[in-house]
Length: 362
Image (tube, rainbow, N blue to C red; front, side, top):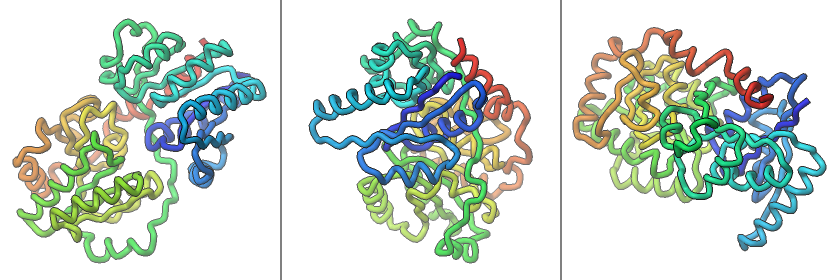
């Protein structure tokens, strides 16, 4: 039986965590034993991780130090002891920093290192990781093409297997008023983190401009953030004087948006991210038959076609809100009626786990 280690940082969110859960849940239990190692600065992550999935074996590594040199020393000393005890066979990382850290560990212990590449970071530190890695799993053609060509023989494109984990998410009572009062309004969805590349301010600008057309437009923003990011976002909303037009859902379960869209009659996902490695939120929306308007950038171009959405060449154009206003006016025409089998075969590939297992065994 092969022992697979999935390291995650406390700061990891979204695709990193969801992909790890999906693989751990579905690997052949007779052939593979999996462990998720959460590297944390405090113990708050324990409650979050256990809430995500109770069936996954989770270990915690708590490290606190303001001095980087001391942190690195503590980190490698702890990991060294951990590897001696656990006898890990394969390390599967999906974070740029962890790719680098665990390259040294895998080289020292002569363990197989699988890199799950979810970004387009071509910094020099990655060359060591790429050079030693047994395989580099790229989540899109965009990511593969952005990675140095000298590593092409190691690369394989595996699109995210997208599933919905928390099927029994309950909406807090304090949010029920949204359906009672606004069910028949026009809703734009923002489902993402809110760092700069995700362009959250362009979503706020869009809501502001749409309200010049009609007061029936509202925004729902579902995101993970720290207090500083949340404060900055609220400040920008206040500057634009649309506090009553955008509802914020910060650090709720990753699929908290799903029961909302079931109760809202008219909705569109707006995805303004720049150079997104893929775009899990787009795929999730399409699987829920929600029309998508996305930035014509990065991996978005590998997801969107005429059956499920529109790509905007310039998300900052004044024409953007006019186009979306028109789509809402003709909503029944644009609303996806079915999710094509071809789409599901790509993003819910039945052989996804078998392909992962093959990478581990080769």
